Each structure stands twice: as C-alpha cells, then as structure tokens.
Image 1 (cartoon, rainbow over the protein chains, first blue to last red):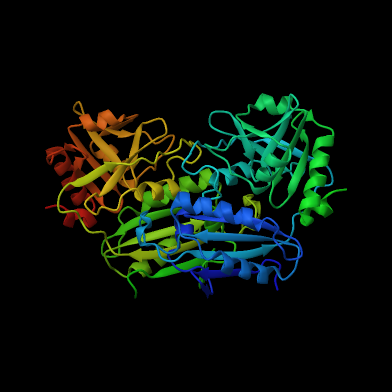
Image 2 (tube, rainbow over the protein chains, first blue to last red):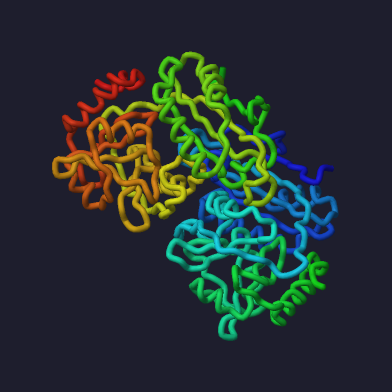
Amino acid sequence: MSATAVRYFAGDQPVQALPDHDRGLAYGDGLFETVRAHRGQMHWWAAHWQRLQRGAAMLRMTLPEESRVLAEATQLLAGDDAVLKLIVTRGSGGRGYSPASAGVPHWTLSRHPLPASPDAGLDLRWCETRLALQPALAGIKHCNRLEQVLARSEWDDPAIHEGLMCSHEGDVVCATAANVFILLDGAWVTPAIDRCGIAGVCRAWALQALPAREARLAVTDVEAADAVFLCNGVRGILPVARLGARTWQPHPQVVALQHRLAAEHPAFATEVS
Amino acid sequence: MSATAVRYFAGDQPVQALPDHDRGLAYGDGLFETVRAHRGQMHWWAAHWQRLQRGAAMLRMTLPEESRVLAEATQLLAGDDAVLKLIVTRGSGGRGYSPASAGVPHWTLSRHPLPASPDAGLDLRWCETRLALQPALAGIKHCNRLEQVLARSEWDDPAIHEGLMCSHEGDVVCATAANVFILLDGAWVTPAIDRCGIAGVCRAWALQALPAREARLAVTDVEAADAVFLCNGVRGILPVARLGARTWQPHPQVVALQHRLAAEHPAFATEVS
C-alpha cells in the first residue's frame, strides 16, 4: 500500500475518483479532519467526529455514517502509525451556490506519514496575512482555507517552523496549522475562536488539562508571555523557543503537559524525551 | 454529449478524473470562471481570463496555457448556446497548507444549460449572512465560497430570485451570484469591492457603459434608489422589481443598458424584449 493511499466514497458507495460537480472542489463546500493514528488506532477519533458534526450543523450538511467512515479509515491505516485525513463534501450540486440540489455527501480518506518531531522548541514568525472575522464559519474545520495557504506561503525558510496569525482587528488567533497557548501573569490563556480560528482537538484537551481560559490576546501579550506552546491533534504539544527576537527556555509547565499528554494518548509517548 | 459533460486536465494532459491530493478539494485553493457562450463563442473570454490572471497573481498560482484552455472549451461547447465553467486549482500538494510542493495546475471544464431568463424584474431579499472583510482575497473569483453557499441557503422560495449581501460592517456588497448597481440621486453607483466581493465581468462593462462610480453603499441607499439592477457575465443585466416591501417599475435607463448590451454581445440579444 502506498504511504499516501487515497479512497473515495459517494454516500456509502466506494467510487474510483471524486464524482463530477463536487461542491468541495467548486466552493470549498466541505469539512475535514486530520487525525493521528498510533498502531492503527485513532485515540481522539470521538473528538474529531464531534467537531465534524458541529461543522455539519453550521453548514447544514449531511455526514456519512460514522461507523462506515471509521471502519474504512481503520482498514486504510492497517495497524500503522500514520496521519489519516478525512474530507467530507456536500456532494454534487450543479453550478449554483444553492445547496438544495446536492446529493449524498462525498468523502475521501488518505493516509500520510507522521510529521517529523522537532528536536527542540519551535521557531516562529508573525504572518502578515490577517484572518477575516466570520462568526458564521468560526471554530469549524471547513475547506475554505485560502487565508492559511496565503499565510503559509509567506516564508520558505525551513528553519521557521510556524507562523502566528492575527485577526483583522489585530488580535492573535492561531498559527497557520495549530492553536496557541501562552502563560501570562501566571495563568494560561488561549485566543477565543468565536470570530475566526479553529477549535482544535488538542486545544480542547489542553484547555481542560492546564486548565486555561479563553481571551482576546494582543501581540504584546504573546511577546510578554513566560511560556508559549502550539498544539494540534496530529503533533500534540509543541513548545515554542523563539518568535522573532524573543526567545524562551523550556518551561517546566509545558514539559509537564507534554508528559501528561503522553500518558493519556500513546501516540505522543514517543514525542517526550 | 451530455448537457453537463466534464473534462479534467493536469497541466497540459487530459486525465480521467481529478487527481489525488488536489488542493482545490482540500482547501478551496483555486479559482473559477463561469462564461456564457453563444453559438459556441465566448464573447467576454478575454475579460474572464484577465480576472483569472489577477486571481493567480494574488494567490501566486500557475495557470494552464490560455490557448489550450480556450481550445478545449471551444471543443466542449461544440457550437452551442451554453454556460462553460472553468475551475483551476493549484494542483496536488500533500497534506499541509504550504503551496511550495504543489505540482502542475489541475483544471476542469464543464458545460451547463443556459439559465432561464426571468419574465419580469427580479424579486430580492436581504441575506443575514455577512461577508467578512478580507482585502487579500477581495475582487478575485477564488474557490472559497462558503459565505455565498450559506447566504443562498437562507431561502428556498422559488419566487425569490436572489439575495443581497452586506459586509460585516453593514455596507451593501453584492448579491450571492451577481453584482448590484443602483441609481441614487441621478447617478449610478455600485459597491466598492476592495475588501470583499467579486469584480464581475459584466460589472466592469456596466461601470464603463453607464458610466457608474464605486462607493460604499448603505442598506438605506438601496432602498432609496430610483432603480436597481443586478448583473453577471452569464445573465447580463437583470432589472430588480422588488426588495422586501420596496418595489420598482422598469426604468428607462436600465432598459437602455440592456439594449446596449444586446447590441454589443450577441448572447444577450435574445434577452431583450
């Protein structure tokens, strides 16, 4: 099996390729999840599926049967350590924006190698691309991701691991593909995602585990923080070592959080030194 | 040939279906054009291709060869009256947002029946879905269209032809699939599209033909207007007869503009009574 095998489905039927007139291709009219698998098991599957359900409710989209998706995903993973990507679109729907004529949902599964674990803390930059404020789409993992594509295209230096993004009002929101937490005045804080940004699966875990609170954060808050980490469901907790001229030493609370995640989620046990 | 035949290409090669890992499907990382053809000829092709080029420059995307796209489109149209839809994506590009590893562009052509011409002026509503302000994506016809999908899903009454959308700041911007012009205090005005909205091909024509100016427009401006029309490259000039409780009689300047368009663009000659 190829390391990047892809499977396509229309409703509950396997198909050879994405069907014609797919609204995901036409309009980004779909949702996705990227799930870390350890020995073929997706420890956070339930959280990913719940986010998909929230997205489907906001977009008034039908999802395929969870049990069928899980069975196909498990077969594709074949017991391996890998990243599973699921895209669900509204199906085929003619030429106009109206979703009324869309048929059964289309979905595709692909498996990808695990990302390399960084040897040390991440080196970040600020992105110039701003996130537009759109409460009607905030929090969910929909397929309209041109802002992230533009932001990620701002640098090609491999020594820079990620970029932080601000909203059009200047609040810090997230990295291009991760959420961000900061330790500020002794308390953990992560940006609110009610107007833009994604409700990350690892973000939800860290909000409870630390615990942390949600707030509007300014650039100066991040630069004044005593510790910063990024997180996502594929890479877990990622300590930040540098952001422009600002540097941070490894922080014991972040190390402790990494150990706690490793204890709860076996995929991340290998990430902790 | 089916009325909705679809063709797929990767770079300059015809392919059977959309290739795996397409970034259009994954992120809406692409552009599209919807072009009216009359007896197989696309009168506004150059304007559509120029907008595609502006979009490709903003997204830093490679386009296929124009001559090849035009030849394939002309073959697909087979001399008919039809709507041609072109989608160009950044190609296949792995799992992350970075466009650096994307290969040749993927493109798809599909033909669709002409839309029915309304017997009388359009009946409009106001949409609740707001357009986010995003200057980095404004004006171009990219494939991140969930806002339009949400707006168009707000009604299913076939007696309502279109919905007007406002930005998050409350300015009137466009209809879900058309631009809007209003006659206010004796002068034609259309919303500026520097922060959201699409630079329509027929909008550009009407801006010159009337002439009209661009401005920020309030809801009250539209409701106070002496005449309102929508326009797009597929349907031409569409007089508005009603917006909620407000009604308009056919306006001689709009009728004159329809006749001028019919004289310049043969596809629209049949639309004028």
